[in-house]
Length: 318
Image (cartoon, rainbow, N blue to C red; front, side):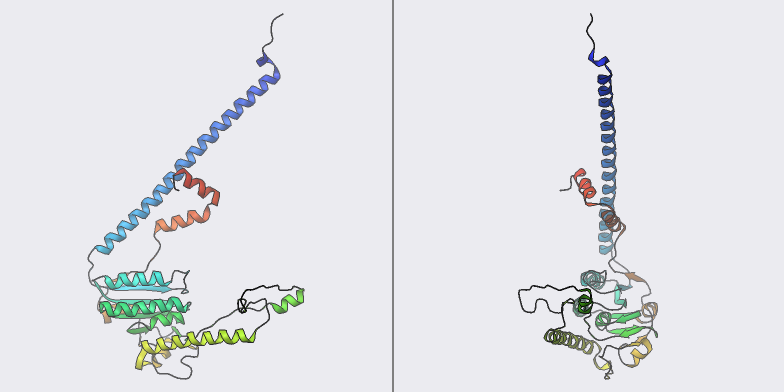
């Protein structure tokens, strides 16, 4: 009687087939992972190369002598620490514009509803410092809107140009919010707030109004308003035709703002560069994202944390 080969039994054959299938799947998975690792390496090398190229291009552009031109810095959208129109971006752009020997004058073009008085104040102070340091004139050009914190920046210029339909002014300060106490009462919801410090929960929207807190907040707003008024008076000087409404938060069209001394002339950037500065070539110094930065942000937004971690590990980023 001959011995039976175990591999010839149906169970052994099935097990052998499963092992082969598992081995094939494992090898296929390994090939896929290798391909993806190489793909991401190529992508990140391309992004890194683009950043290096952009940095070298900007360095060479900044060191190359420039011909006479009008230097432009844009202030667009809300002014705030977490927006494109923040003090760091704007002051960096202004320094570059002032330091360029070819810049005959600096123009700040604004189209903004306002924003943070802190960010605006930092830009205003830097404008005055750079003017005194480089002895160059600064002009502000207001487009559709130059209100509140945007006007705060504009008054740092030597002269302000507006369109006849521009919205100019809004010299005031506000703090807004909502109160949800009535809705909570109707819904039967109780607010439970614990604080260490009597005023830590000041102006909490889910708690009843506190007259003492509101008096304190109003005093703070009034102080900031007075700071704003002082800056406008300092920047505009005797040109400002003060009325009871000047610092009330009202805004005017460009034509009326010239009459009130809030602005100096009607005109655009092109008119200013051609007829006043006498340098028609306009170079924009505004800080803007380059292609590599946009790609990096898109990749970062599109990829999950696990994938990003895997990509970093694959290219030895620690």
